[in-house]
Amino acid sequence: MAEYPLIDAYLATMDRQLSHRRDALELREEIADHLLESVARFTSLGLDPHHAQRSTLDRFGEPHIVAALLSTVPTKGIDMINALSRAIGVLSILTALSWVAAMVTFPIGFSDALIPTTDSGAAIASATAAAAALLTSLTLVALNIRTAGRVDALTSIVIVTGVLASTVAGAMPWAVPIWLLVLAVGLAVTFARDTRSPLGRGWVSIALLIVAPLGILLGGLALVVYNGSGMFITRTSQALAREATAQLITFEVLAALLASGFAVIAVRALASRSLAQPPEAFVPA
Amino acid sequence: MKGESLKGHLDLLILAVLAEAPRHGYAVIEELRERSGEVFDLGEGTVYPVLHRLERAGLLSSEWGDAGGRRRRSYRITAAGTAKLAVDRANWNRFVSGVAAVIGRSPWPSTP
Image 1 (cartoon, each protein chain N blue to C red):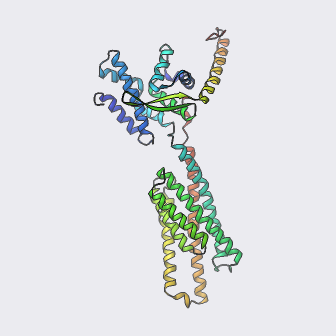
Image 2 (image 1 turned 90 degrees about the vertical axis):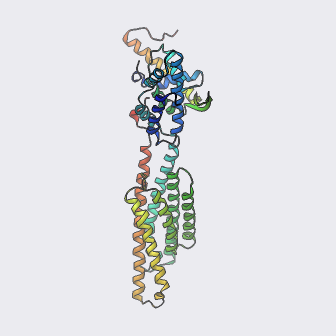
Image 3 (image 1 turned 90 degrees about the horizontal axis):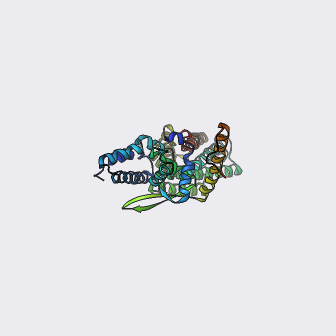
């Protein structure tokens, strides 16, 4: 289209204004078709190419105004984003609640630090832990799909870690360090790619990308080193109590971190849905 | 008449133009200009957001075709759009009759 430099320049400006939209290419093609048809019309009426372009652009309007008006109509993909945001919002609420429940049930099922464990307590703690692992995995997968717009390679990794963590948590819920460590991989992958998104920005990313996985990793390593050293064989009742207390505190802190992080994500996800709606003032209805 | 004066009526006008035949954006604008006796002087770029919004609302559908080597998007009114047009047209006629009655002029357009 080198024969119409003014149209080219106009379209280049529109490209910059609309580059954030998924349908930018379609919008460009539609506008280009309009402008070129208009130029042809003015040329057929006797205008030279330069004046035909000038008249065309005068009639079409300032690019930033047209782009602003076009931006008030969401892209077609925004429906999927809205649906995913709603799903993420609901899943995050459930995930946060499941971690709060895990905080409450861990002492009665998996730790003798506060009260002696019972069979029924262990069953409740197991069910809660498995639910927390499953809900966290589902939320992470939804977050990845929202970020990538599809199931890409990183999303596949998160799906695999989610299935693994949920399976282990379902079959061996008492093996908390194992399934929590697998879950930490999914957390790190998800929030490493999501640091700039409206959902995962700020301290949520720091908490769920760095602190939680690192805490899980260090806690798991400490347990492996402790058991590998053989110290647990000769431990006294006092050492046993200290170990149980350390495990309980570690789990409670990590669960609190996860609960608060997903609660914030829930609020942001549900708020982002309203941001995706076109502002009424710009809709020429 | 500038686009600002048409604000609020553009949906009805576009649906009416597309009720007769599918058209692409430029043809819709040309048709509006011709039918109005060149009274409607729209910023042409402002028509596309309306077309897109009507499509998202399910009142229009669009499809891409080829026009002399360029891709061209054409719009077609849907059944929902036709129903909306009928309602809006009736409302408009009532409104015009009411205004005309108040200001003491004959209703326009006059209906038998």
